[in-house]
Length: 210
Ligand code: AP5
Image (cartoon, rainbow, N blue to C red; front, side):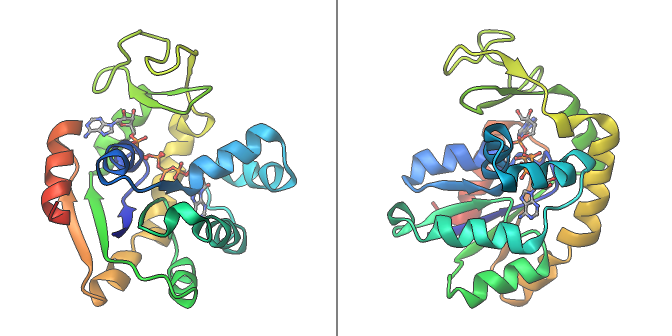
C-alpha cells in the first residue's frame, strides 16, 4: 500500500507513521527527518534548507522532489511506503504523479490550530534516534532521556512558538489546497486527530481498511 499522511505541523503524522510502518512492514519516508539529517551532517543541501525550516517556510520544491525521487527508487519501497510530510504543495503532488507513483490513499489528520500550538510546546525529540515524545500526551518512560536509546531529548528549533505560528500559516496557504487535489482523485480520507495516540491509530487503521 502506498500511503500519504497529510496534516498540519504537529498533527501526529510522524507518530502514526512509525506505528503503521511497523504494523504494515513498509518504510516511512519523512522529508522533514531527511532534511534534519542533512542539517545535522552540515551538507550543502542541509545548510541551505536550514534557513527555510528555522523560519517556518517550506524548502524549495525542486530540493524535496529530488530527495523523494532518490528515496522512492530504493528497493525497500517496492512493497509500499508511507510518505510523511510530502507532498506539501500542488507542484510536489504533480511531480509525484509525473514520476508514475500510484498513491492508494491519502489520510488527512484533522487537528485544530489551538491544539497544535499546545502539542508543539510539549514535543521532545531524541537527539540520536529521532524518536518523538510529548511531555504530557506521550512521555518517555525515562523522563528527559529517550526510552528507545537512552540519549538526551531536545526541543526542535522549529518548535519555538513564533515559528510554529509561521508553520501553521504556511500549511493553510500552501499545503491545505492539496486536500482538494486528492479529493478530486477520490483517495482522500479524513481522520480526527484530536484523540490520544492509540485512539487515533485505531481510527487510521479503520480508514485504511486494515
Ligand atoms: P516536518 O518534520 O515534516 O514537520 P511537520 O509537518 O511540520 O510535522 P511535525 O514533524 O512537526 O509534526 P507531526 O505531524 O509529525 O507530529 P508528531 O507526530 O511529531 O517538516 C519540518 C520542516 O521541513 C518544514 O517546516 C519545512 O521547512 C521542511 N519540509 C519538510 N517536508 C517538506 C516538503 N515536502 N516541502 C517543503 N519543505 C519541507 O507529533 C507532534 C507532538 O504531538 C509530539 O510531541 C507527539 O508526541 C504529540 N502527539 C502525537 N499524536 C498525538 C495525539 N494523538 N494526541 C496528543 N499528542 C500527540
